[in-house]
Length: 575
Image 1 (tube, rainbow, N blue to C red):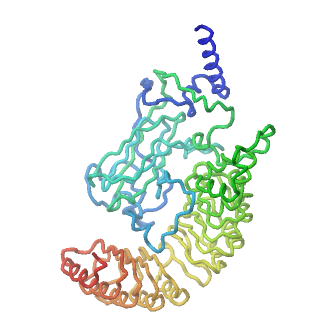
Image 2 (spheres, one colour):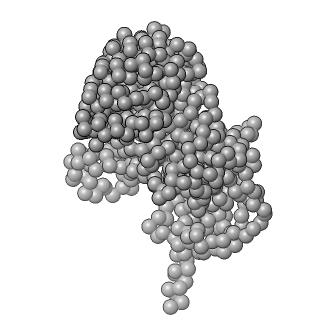
Image 3 (cartoon, helix red, strand yellow):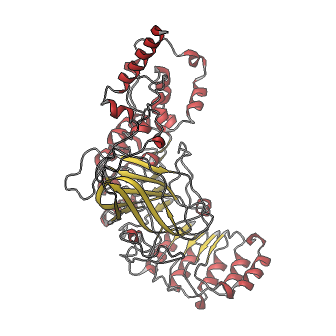
């Protein structure tokens, strides 16, 4: 028995040594790769817990409100609560731009890029800075209406107020979950159990998905609780060592939060004994099998053997590439590793990626020059590294580009957008929350710059007669004359958003004219118009048989109830 115990002790010692080569024994026992039940640990109260509200809203993907207003904007999240514990629809809260599933069913909704992980649920985000860095013990989100949209909470090692930011910026997930719909739409304090992290933070990121909700979710404030000193683990539970994972290699990409990189496997297989039965499988069959892997898994698999390295480097595996789920890990080195594999790239999603210096304009331009010739779809929402040189390279290198998303790239200067006029095949262009003024003779808008929206729609009607979807959200001075020109020139419109266009009045007959001209209409937003009448709904029912989405939020529904019943009788599809 004693020799056996000695042998087991030696084996366990070897396991611990392998785990401890990069740090102390205490760090290895608490490391991410050890299988530890953190729920069975307790911390000693080494200092007083600090409670603080957000000091500043640093970044966000969208909001319901206007850029020059405070109503329904993300900036309402800074400071103490304005509404909580009250419930209801309040303008002093933060509201995102969308809710529900029907946004994904619209004509303007892009198709999902292959290899997007099913565990990636985030649709919007916001980043909040707090006064003091602490080791988080709790995060509380005060939701005042239709809660349940928060799907992930992250903490950053960077102090956003420092004058000398570090080169290495880490993001750690404190909590993650799936989209939910709360049983009660009333206010609540959402405080999930968070994971401990080994660095202090005063920068949090909330990611949301409102697809399960029946109305806009509204957030009032975010509370960060934490301690100034790192908690001491009072009770240790000896970690279980996974005997199938005793390698001295690098940490898993998904666990370290490191860069998204792909290593060459050529140097690791000098003594390879063959590829097993994979050598007997047809090349095409292996390609089909690995096409179901996410991008990091594909990179890992390429390190197994030369055969799989060849398959995982095949450009056909990278025709569509979504890097948005890995925004916290993507950097210039990642793009450089992916560059030789993406020569056939057609659809690329880099939304949210590369901020705070992780991706530089030079690194992005190098990638596009090498991989952009076949691009037809490019999504760059909230990519703050973009500058005029980047847009110039995109427009010069991607002649086939049909879809371009620059939403919330609010740091691009107006003159940078002049290059977009060179994209002759462009079919879909999103410029939400940008500073664009004009593109030579093609006028586009931003509510803070354009004074006459009638000029915008007049040019669209004259030069874009094949237009299918148009979003004129909050074009406050769009007149009945401009709308008449638009519907006369763009009769094929299937989606039209006139939400908060307060200068349009139903009494002028403009809405009824719209209904008679746009026979293919599937989605119509008249949010907060407040002048929609019975005759407008009757014309919609009689002339727009394909209508699926109608938003008349803000109208007096009591006066329209009987008209709704008549409209359903005229158009059975409205049931």
